Amino acid sequence: MNSYDIAVIGGDGTGPEVTKEALKVSEAIAAKSGFKLNWHHFDFGGDRYLKTGEVLPDSAVDELRKFKAIYLGAVGHPQVKPGILEKGILLRLRFELEQFINLRPVKLFRSQDCPLKDKGPEHVDFIVVRENNEGLYAGAGGYLFKGTPHEVAIQESVNTRRGVDRCLKYAFELAKKQRAGKPWKGLKPEDTSAGKTAQLTLCGKTNVLTYAFDLWFRAFQETGPKYPTVKTEYAHVDAICMWFVKNPEWFDVIVTDNMFGDIITDLAAMIQGGLGVAAGGNINPEGTSMFEPMGGSAPKYTGLNVINPLAAINAAAMMLDFLGEAKAGAAIENAVIKIINTKIQSLAAGKMGYGTREVGDLVAAAL
Image (cartoon, rainbow, N blue to C red):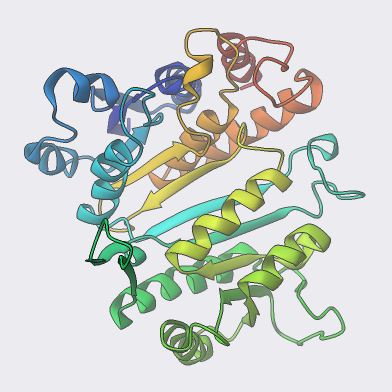
């Protein structure tokens, strides 16, 4: 029997509530599929910080590095200044564990949850690959004359060839697998591109960010020939935002830098039905990866049993897939789709027709 040790950080607000449901569903599919999950709980988050003044002990990163996967509920506490927990836990783990890919599957499960006219599940089904260790999030920059009328604030985008290359390689590999054997769909429908079975779109801003995205574009062009079955496209980030709304069906896999990835995945979450179903992974293909719902801690709903746990459950499905239990991950996603289409009234908190715990029970039962 395969056995997996997983670190669990429930975090703040509704984080522990949705985490409980994700673990419940994971246990259900593990029992059915014949593998074992060993949960190791850590109390990192706002409450610990308020008690001890410590966000993440120096020993914690080394301890978490021993695990193949981390499951994170949420961070963000109303009594802690914004940025302290996010930088001290999320960004620190992403950087120090070299989780250089942020992976965001974007899939609409039923038409009524999409705000776009005449778009259904067949139109919204793509993946965003976001570089996760560099760019504007690297923290390079500083102030001149801070607090004076002449203040200057500088934030620098750091892009290395190593960082860009490894992100692009991951995205090309994913694109090659994503639509293997399927007809190509793309930004230029009139282009049949015989022999191409997948599309990878680079999202950038080459006309303005002429240094950073010159590097990205050159690396993209140099990597492309190594993947002859992958159709490559380039689009400016502003055009991507427009096409997400007008023609989301044009996209298979999108690769982009840290900042643009952060922005377009929130737009993507809305067209897939909202943050109630949006999940993501912070991936180190050879090391420790971390999986989480995208919705944050939502402290105003804490303890009310109304928060939607489906994003957290979807994150658990991604985690199991990463661990090598692809059939179990797919089974969870199929169960989520089933209960959304047969039971759930709305994906919004408090409007589901069921409580948080009951939704978890429904998904577990559907397995």
